[in-house]
Length: 551
Image (cartoon, rainbow, N blue to C red; front, side):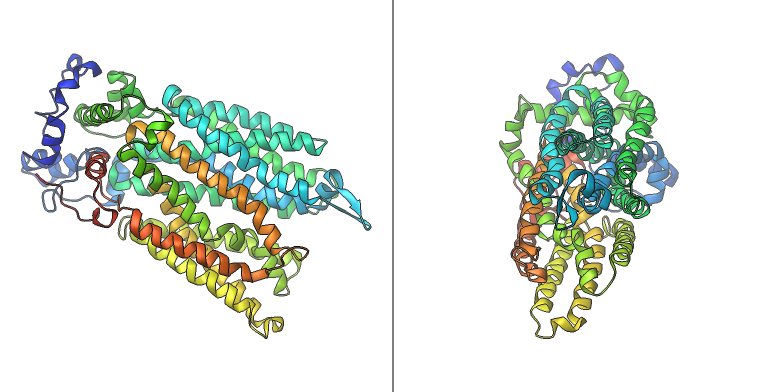
């Protein structure tokens, strides 16, 4: 008896409540596995179709049991799933824009005049309000991630995202027409709630509609859209920042209207997650959605999804946030939260958020430094594209491990260059600038996109929305902390550490490297069913790759 058949046998008796018999589905005990279906076919064409037919839930066939289709062939077969995953990921653009605008708009002269106070002949934003404006979105994200995790399970990802878009439009309206710092802060807090949803929904949605062969590409694509948002904000601010009116900052704020409106127009046509439909016992709707997403035998896929849901319901009768910290889910939640902590521990907020600071130290004018920052963002986009060639070939674990190790070396080098006796000669500063440019590429080629894939794949299907929400909560907490601490460490009127802060992040990044090696498993090529078994059996992270599940 194969693993898939045996694993389902233990839960077959509980399938009737899902209403499977009324649409003629045999018990999963008698449902052929992917391997058995392939072996029963004699032509290579039928073998290829059988494999393409497998979603992200069935077990992967043994090597040599099927002709493995190319990634492009799978994407072509499931192009509807890929396109709708990309459409939902548009929400991440707004997060990228807001993350950059929070730090960039406060340096616009018109913004300083309207929301700051006069000091020694010029207008400035007080440090208290700087911290408030920079942290407000992250505070909102904290609550938005928790709320959206609950709502996605109760109302579905499509409706949850649509409601977030409506709130986003209202929040952006408040920011655009704010006349006081208090009103602007409220707008940023409200917008932060929607941004928590915009980060929680896309990767989880992609993981649930795409087959395992392309799951990594579509989930990590969220990072690409975040970078697109940052690039768009950079370009708009460069074009409007020199205006002498409120339009200098209102136009960048208003840019955040665009993508929620696009999402609201398209969401009524977007297929709901088949996992959500099946949990609501909507088997007909699940089959129709699977067919629309490109699965050739949706009834078989439905049976395999049902077996996973029933198995998980045996281990947890409820799906609350507390269940994320019980049993094998505790480990899965730790990993989903930890990948974001490891990414933030590399010092990405300092290295990329303050890149213009080092460019100006190197002698570039403020305008040229900003232009070079745009170039770094474009390089980061190229890095995300390069990650797609690594995510399946080298895997999530190996790519993340090597990436964080390289980032540890780069931040250490930034610190060393800062203590050289000839620092004022500009040579060490040029070295730091080079490190920052390389850092951007490495981060967005490794741990940046890999984190999105991992934290969407690791959770159990029953707790995915909530676990992903907890991952975003961790990112928000780090965002709040670093937006307060980093300015105090780097500002000339405070600790004035300059590049010496690299020593701090080299240490935290080294700890992140160690944690990845010890705790992060390889999920590439693993179905959700296989991941459930590996976590249930408490297989060590280092043994996930290549582990042969007993027959």
